[in-house]
Image 1 (cartoon, rainbow, N blue to C red):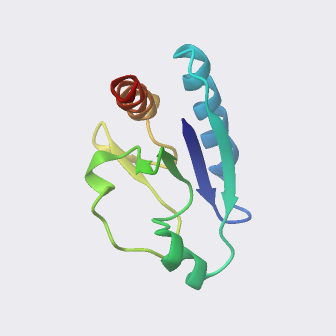
Image 2 (image 1 turned 180 degrees about the vertical axis):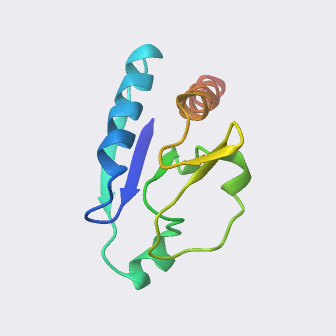
Length: 110
């Protein structure tokens, strides 16, 4: 399993997102390669499908299911709507669900 945390330099939610991913991976006892991807310009944002900082992907899938078909790529802060309010880090439950999905995909390939 590969977990990517995409961010731009100076993003105040980058480190909280990394901490949240680490906690979820530990709770799920998931073996994963965790990669932090720094996005420095709009061309790179377009090329890699960057939805804003921070973006978390598990095996290439965004942790926010509703955003998986989104095409609004660029250099912006990303927020997540949860519980009727916008936050800068996705809820741990979303990360947990994405990790579990990846584990199930991996198990069915065996």
